[in-house]
Image 1 (cartoon, rainbow, N blue to C red):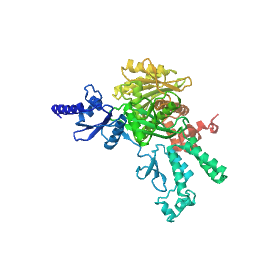
Image 2: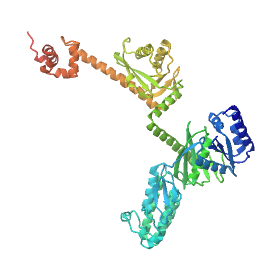
Image 3: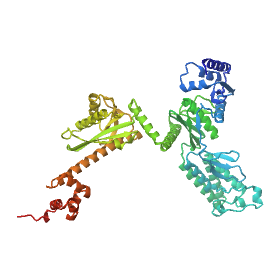
Image 4: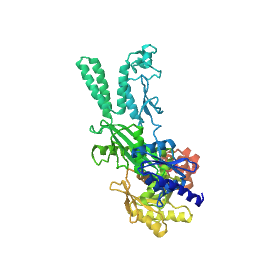
Length: 614
């Protein structure tokens, strides 16, 4: 598009904006092919739409949207609530490119009560309101199965799919099936259960699915007492059985407060690309619905905008008419006959915290699911988190960690482990024998090894690490810094993992002078850092043990006069240990090293069999 064409486009759009009314409504933006690319709502159409064309608009994504607009249409409504509802329906109808994308719960199951003379009750993922009434969806399958199990135990609704009418039952058109004979059905098909009784059971099942269990319990208790007064004890016992089942079910549900009834609760959990809006409905003091919707952002939408969208979407989806909505902040919207509450304490604050916890858990579950499908996503997330925590100039793709190992200065060794993309790169691990340090001096040993490691990398022009982690506190960090910055003039970030009095790693250190970094010890990132620390411990100690063991073996065999290194190594390669060499018979040793040397080794380990001259 040329500059002249763009100026002509903007002039046309501004002429439309100038004519917009100062009334609530919904507006639609179109591209050059007259496809709707964005749907919005406003208290005042003129004020809202004109804001897109102000020169001070600084959101990059908004500027991109405006560059695509070629036409504008709008619909005036009476109230802001109507504007919200209209916006929601248009977004679902046209799925515009720049609107927030709702990943709705169509894949989650719901419970259906069919529109039949003898309704059936079952779970389904297909929603067709011509077939029946739907309750849900249920994001927690166990909750749905618990409700279905309760209804089946209480009312035993039919499960057969044959069309059934009152006239057909009277005419004797149907026969009982296996479900009747195993007592999972009361036999309405052959009039063993009356039409009226079946309808009464279905009505009570509907109330349970709505969460109105308290009223059912009250009615049942009154019926039970009435039957007992009339001495109809068997029928009273059956009502009591149902009463206890419902009461047990209610006691396991989340009871909030008997003073809270018919309240909606909404919370929002946000990140850079996705928002999670959780909805909880409380009826008769108990939570009977909890669901989290996921919204993929398209235009840097604010929490205000996303929460508004969530409130309208979920109240419509779950057919809620609650007069009170509990929210984390006052939304910039008005709904007819609805009060918004932002609680600071008490039961409603507990409810809000519970909703927020559900939203965070859903976010965590989605993240885990995505990382399971794409493990690299988790590694990148952890690297970004570490980069952010330490303020690193670039992503810490390659991390190296050092550790020393010795016993009173003997057999002193050191080890370096390398992690790439938060995973061990074992082919890059390095072992070091301490050469210049005498006695148990960890700082001097660390200084030697770090200098050897990075002077060689520089000499061979190998890539340097993005972060060095010292297995220790400020002292080890200082020693490494002396080598890296003062001696080698390198700019490599250095962190440290410090231990507490119980010798447990409890903090991450960084900076100069080193400062504690705010990082929870039970976090995933801290777990990975301690994994690096544990790995370098393991590698260093294993190398130290190998060296001690080799020295012990060599000193034992080297003390045999007449046996040189070549013979020693041949015996160790064949028999694996000094113990097995000492236990070998003369023939075995002869086969391995010849008769003369075999006799020398055998006599060394079996002096009692040696016949010396006097």
